[in-house]
Amino acid sequence: DAPLLEVCRLRVEFPTRRGTLLALDDVSFDIRAGEILGVVGESGAGKSLTGAAIIGLLEPPGRIAGGEIRLEGRRIDDLPYEAMRRLRGRTIGAIFQDPLTSLNPLYTVGRQLVETIRTHLPVSADEARARAIRLLEETGIPAAGERFEHYPHQFSGGMRQRVVIALALAAEPKLIVADEPTTALDVSIQAQIITLLKRVCREHGAAVMLVTHDMGVIAETCDRVAVMYAGRIAEIGPVAELIHRPRHPYTVGLMGSIPAMDVERERLAQIDGSMPRLGAIPAGCAFHPRCEHAFARCRSERPELMDAGATRAACWLVGAGQELAA
Ligand code: SF4
Ligand code: MG
Picture 1 (tube, rainbow, N blue to C red):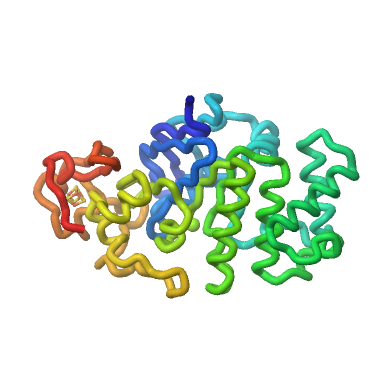
Picture 2: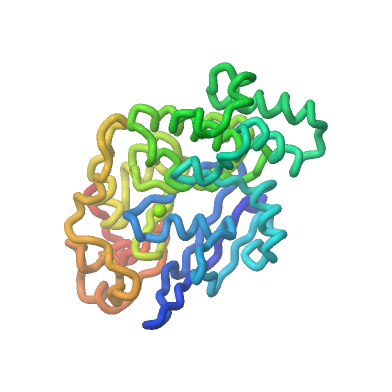
C-alpha cells in the first residue's frame, strides 16, 4: 500500500545574478490516500514552494534541481508541460489563497464547472450540469441551480472560495493542494471553509496537502503535520504528537499557544528573531541563532530528520535522546 504522493529529497533552486539560491533543500514526506497533511511555518519557509513544485507551477526562474515527486508511484516532477497540465486538472486539484486566481471572470461558475468536469470525465452535458449543481450544493452554496448561472464577481469572497473548492473537486482528484485557502477571508468565514474542505475531501476520498501558517487550522483539520523552517522540514508527525509532544525546539515555539479559531493569527511571531533569508541561511542547524538550546554542534553540523518517538525531527537534541518540556 504505497503512499499516494511521495516527495523525496526535493530541491528547488532560484538562479539569480548573484548566484543560485537554494529555496528547498532535501524535503521529503508522503501523503496517503484520504489523509490531510498540514504544512506549517513562517512565510518564506518554503511551504508554498513545496506545493507549487508538486503541482508543476513553480514560478520561473525557480526550478526543481534535485529529488523526485511521485504520484501513485509514477514520477511527475519531470513531466512535459501538457501532461502536467492534464494531471493538474484531473488527478491533482489546487486551491489558492485568492479565489479569483482560480476563476475566469468572463464565464459563469456553472460553465467553468461543466467545462472542468467534461474535460476530465466522460459524461454528457446534462450529467455534467447535474454534477456541477450537486457540487455547489455540497459546498454550501444556497440556491445552487440559480447561482450556477452567476459570474464570479456576483459572489462574496467566502462564497467564491466555496466555488473554487467545488471546482477543485470537479474532476474527482486524488490529491488537493490547498495553499492558505482561507487567509484572504473574514475570520468568521475561515472556520466554515476549513470545515467544508475537510468534509468534502473526506466524502470524496481526496488526500489534501494544506499549506497554512495558522496552527489553529492545523489542529482542527489535519492528520499529520510537517513543520518547515528555512526551506527544510524541521519536524513531521501525527498532529496530536506535534501539538502535545513537539520534539523540535521550533515546533515547541509554534505550539506555544494554539489560538482558538476565532482569535487573530500571527502567533508564530512569538518566537524571538526571524527566519533567515534565502542565501543567508546559517551553517549547521538553520534555527540555531533563535534556539535557546543551541550547543556547539548545532552551529557546525546540520541535523537530518531523526526518529523522535512518534515524530521525526531534525534536531541534535533528539539524537542525544533529550526531551524538551513542551
Ligand atoms: Fe536547537 Fe540545536 Fe536542535 Fe537546532 S539542532 S533546534 S539549534 S538544539
Ligand atoms: Mg505562501
